[in-house]
Length: 166
Image (tube, rainbow, N blue to C red; front, side, top):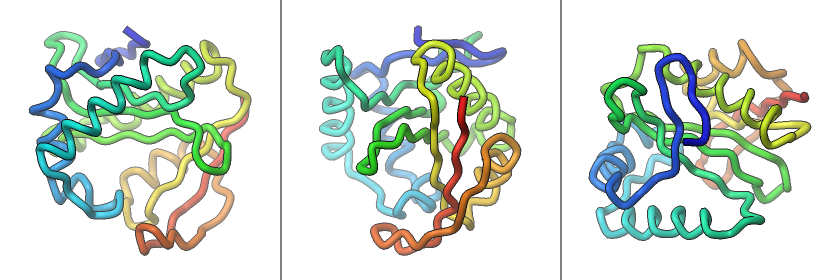
């Protein structure tokens, strides 16, 4: 276990998560604001194997974990704390569609912020979100400091850029 919130447990991913991980990464609705590309089972298997390999490195700065329901251990998505190409500590999450609109996004984001600041001793975290992803924008607006909107060439969208300092 990495950390818990009222309803959720955050833990390392395992190969047992592949079916639901693939279901999430292969859902156009879930991936719509993350570049829009869906991935095949083989691509998702390789992605999951790469994530698991990062766990073996003690100096790892690319953490992607499973989000599970505390009471049932059901996999509902992933949350990430990664050092991006600008050397910023960036957070992000994805949820299976059937777990949207239940407050899990805000709950897991707040849990990750607490974990990043208290356990990892990170001084500043950032988040980028497609401005059309209104639910995530609301979550970030309620917690982070909005900095600016920028064009994301890779995903061909306008991202909102946020920072939060400890």
